[in-house]
Length: 392
Image: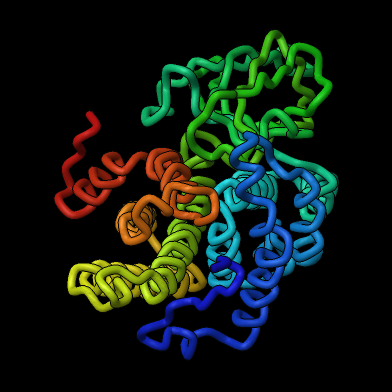
């Protein structure tokens, strides 16, 4: 039984709420995942390698910066289209979705939103095609959930800046051609800048021996007296507002993406339960199996509508950071629970590379932590509804 025979669950006919363009985009990405990702992703995960040849194909399909205007190489689509792309990519693997999510929300978005016209024209078209690969430097070895305490610093030297510090857990960094990096200036104000591969003192050591996101490049960004030209600074934002807006876009994509992983697990478990015979009947006939499947489908359906409504609000520029936070937290937890429950339906077969459950489960252990941990997002919701901050 191959995942490529995929039947996407849509129990409440959500498809009726999508436009023809949405369904066309989703269908093209789904077909590509079936053709280019599913046949190779288990080997990539087992071998701890990222299939780099997929980057160009992702660019050709418009998976990078789909909501960026066409003038800068994007597709000019809406946020629901972006969400559907992330959903289909994560059905293939969280590592593939992470690569595209970082390229779009954490690199292209800040350059488009906070950069100069010259920066937009220089970087965005090449990022859109995958000719350039980008990464995002915010998290530090000792400052993850508290980015405001970052110690990476830039010092103004008149005609340039000097950058020192380090970032950690950076998707794409070992292969990135450039990165959007956030550091504090002499006045402790967070500033964004573009750091390019080849700048003296800039290195990107790879993080190895991961149990999660194995088909993804993860690394550090180390800055040792790196000279940053003034024209590489992002002039149109200051403070943590900049990186937080980027993370809002990324979290939105995650809230959609993880649904794809859950849908994949459910589809495989449902098919398996109908074929696996025990005690002279398919295990789908047993009450406990039906309970698992029914609960999984219910949670997927709830997550689908949460993501759809969030997409509508984001298209209308009405989605709040707290709403995005709630969707990210809820949907990632749902997907992780789905992977675990569906793995049990397969029994011992569920731990093998012939089926996607364990791979999704391991990946989702990272997704529930990055772009804001499960607990931090819970406190963001708590702060929003009570008006009281638990962070200070």
